[in-house]
Structures are given as C-alpha cells and as structure tokens.
Image (cartoon, rainbow, N blue to C red; front, side, top):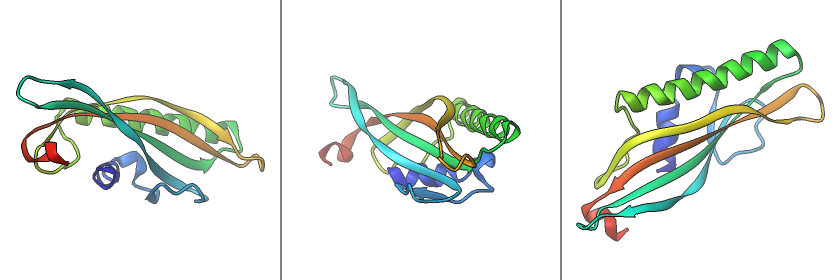
Length: 140
C-alpha cells in the first residue's frame, strides 16, 4: 500500500517538481513518504474491516529566508488541499482487490526541523487513508 500511496502522491501538482522516495531521510531536496502503520477502526457483522492507514509526508526544501519558508508553507497547504479535493472526488490510490478506499484525511503541514546549516528545512504532513477490507484480502 505504501507504493500505491507514493504513486498517488506523485500525481499532486505541488509535488511534480520534486523527486519522491519511500522511507529515505538522506535526500537533500524532494519528498519522502513514511509508513505509519494502520489501526483497525471497526469490524462489521459480515467480517468487513474498516481500517485507518497513516503516512507521514516529509518535504525537504530550501528554507533559509522567510520568503522561502512562506512558499514552502503554501506548498504544504496546497498538497493538503489537493488530497482533500481528491477525497471529495473519490479519486484514491489503487489498493488492490478487496480494499475499498473511503476517504483521505490530512493534518496541515508545517516546518518540522530546520537544518543546522540554516538553509534547508523539513516540512511534515500527516496523512490518513481510511478504507474497508473485504473478501479475499481479509486473510492477508
């Protein structure tokens, strides 16, 4: 599911000018997606499970000036807005057979860490994919 979310985020216009990776913290600029795991929210009478999968999106960018930090904050807001729009349009990552996406939620992104060099910073956005798991995928 991590690769599916990575491919989905690559469609976001606000990330199009940057390289994306999975679980890679050593990049100088770009974005990284981390898997935060999932939790079971509900089990229905027919065995269907409602789950919440969390991800952390980190964008590493130049942040040396207040203008760059404002641009980066606007980028993070645009990513969040795009994700919410995709959820409203019911456009989701392909999760495979038996997994039906219901919605994407996110918490607004902000500057998390400023590098000691004072030039680069890492911005964080927390994402949640809510989905149902039915049929054959219940065994996995």
